[in-house]
Length: 196
Image (tube, rainbow, N blue to C red):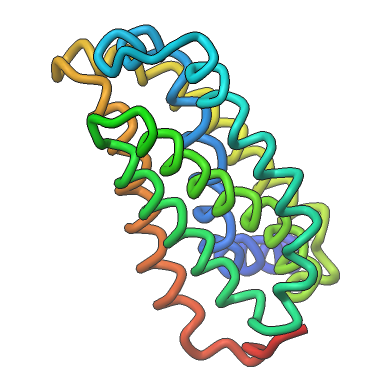
């Protein structure tokens, strides 16, 4: 029994960078809804533009499912995760603009990053934790769900506290940058850093 606990603990520690990565995959999407009225009012967005703002990431998820397997012919899963984090940071930062068109473009970039991340979680888990897929994916999905609901819950209070909806969105793009640094550092000596 003690051996099982020790093995589980080691697996969880090894999986921490991947689990932390899952923190970034939903907040950039779920943080928008609670502050959408403020965004529309400040940027004078039409109902159509507001609809595009909320549906763009979902469209990107579908596109990502088609293109990511082809991308992995050229880059390794580790680099794909890093690229996803950078795209989420760049898109999340760009969309803090005062232009509705730039906001939509930045949201699309965030969606592409999250789409890549959605697929990479399962791929990296099967590659690095082939005998503990259930445990690692359970942690991964659980943390992703918690971050998703947390972002939706704190988005409006943050906008009220700081007087702008931009803070509510910036928090999550900055988180993507932080986790990019953690991921890059943790994977620098990974034994399998080649395309699939």
